[in-house]
Every structure is written in C-alpha cells, then in structure tokens.
Image 1 (cartoon, rainbow, N blue to C red):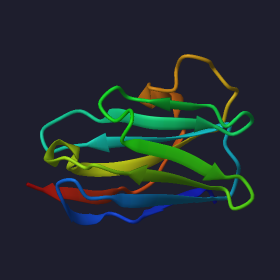
Image 2 (cartoon, rainbow, N blue to C red):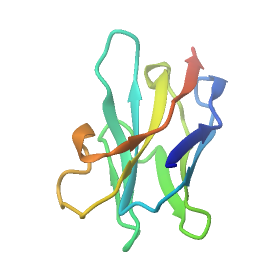
Image 3 (cartoon, rainbow, N blue to C red):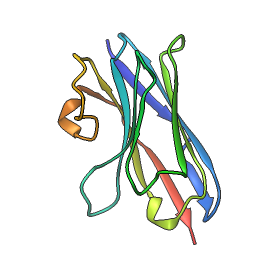
Image 4 (cartoon, rainbow, N blue to C red):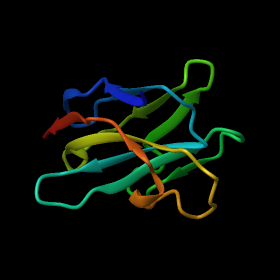
Length: 125
C-alpha cells in the first residue's frame, strides 16, 4: 500500500520558520512535490524535487524563502519554510509522481499520482 504522510505543520508568527516532512512508503517516486491550498482557493504548486538528479523547482512566491530536499534512503522529502508570511497560510500537501519523468510538468497537479492527507500551516501577523 502506497502512503504519503506529512508532518511538521503548525502555528507560527510572521517571519518564523517551519519544516515539513513527507514520509513515503510502498514505492519510490521519480519526483515529489509540495502543493498548498488556502480556503476558497485552488490547490497551487509550491516546490518539487526530482529523485535522480535532485533538481529542484519552486513557485515564484516562495523562491528564496522555501527549500525542498529529499533523503532517498529514507524515501522522505522535506520543505524548509523560512520568512513565513500570513499569505503562506494553507493546508500543505505532499505528492508523488510515479513516472516516467516529464520535464516541465512539475507544477501541474495531474502529474502526481499519490497525495498525502495534508498538514495545516498557519502564519499569524
């Protein structure tokens, strides 16, 4: 059974930091991504990382503040979030792409085949 389990969400003040983790089990993925969804908004891409090359991809809104990384031995992906803003408040979802690798589609939700249950991140002003 394939599972993605996120952890690390919580309440933080503006300017603070959080580190999200996503532990995958049941299979490996050619890429893993983070998306987020705020109330009343569509799910949006945050960051992604390719397993084979560790190439990373970011939404413009988080570049320079968020860092995605992965530990292939643990089949786990992380999202370090610094300089958090109230606009970052959302439920954050981890996603896994079983492949094959398709360049240029990392920001598209339909690229990903498996999703975690989400973890709430709330940034207070």
